[in-house]
Length: 425
Ligand SMILES: [Zn+2]
Image (cartoon, rainbow, N blue to C red):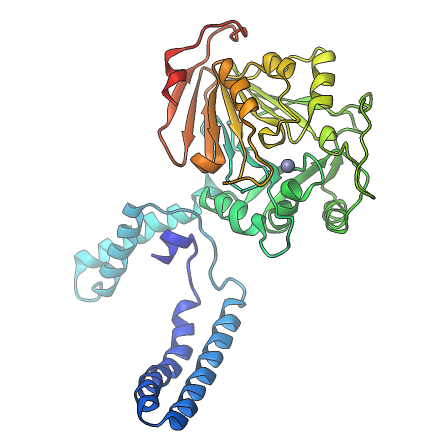
């Protein structure tokens, strides 16, 4: 059951129980006794409660110590209910294997199946011939997990909190990756060095096998981001894709283009930022386009009007079946010419519940809706997975109904009339 809910196999549980249970068997009756005695004689009750508290402290310390043992509870990824049943049946057969020949056979064959399940991520190449993009619900921030058709993986932004009390990378991003049974991240990408995009990348960078770490080479302005980039550099993973001019590459049959920023980009409207901040950091977000068959995805980071206008001016083919609305659907982004140039069938908004910035802005939502785009948002739908085989796309929100959309041979032009399915939501 721990494996089912937490994707971890608690190997340490049995020895830990041997140590902790005898202490707990004192602590529980003592606590009950203390609660009764305290009604009759407060002072004695207090002493007994203090003793109970001391025992519980010892138990906690022992548990922490056990949990810190290497391989105490290895992470194995998601298991299904049938497999949980299978594991229990195997254990049951094992218990009776001395008495019955049938149980012996059951235990052996059960062991083989469970062993094969444990090993398959290492034995078989993963990937299912589809491009799968998941927009995780990270509150205010972005985190996108991409699984290419032959198993290559990419994480674009990892969410993150402006405060230090919650590590989104550890609490949200990594559990999703473990759930998907992914241990390797071929590419980890920071669109720009803001906490809500990059702070959550540290944990995956440290706990998964990462091949390359990409960012836009922006000047270092914060201690935490300097450390992140330094770690990637020390481990030989770092690539400044803007400086290197990485324009386009093919991964598992998917064309990946880095559209923005280029060395030619200079923000037009210089605005004043707070001391030590570059007000145009958002506009220098990496913009990636993925194309697989007829389907395409545009990942826009936090670009604002200035970068959007630049992209349109540069004459890039911005049309995309799915767009991650720039800057969490802020009013400063998704300008009319940009939205028309992208003309998406699906617009994904990565926004928190009750955004204090008022994301997404109603005007922006309406702009996408007017073009007939299906609107999906992480605050209402949770994580949103979009899969494609290059001909159709499946939009699968964690909350709510899934939708299948065919992609026309020629990407729709902005004038295309609204389709009936677009009214569904
Ligand atoms: Zn952001």
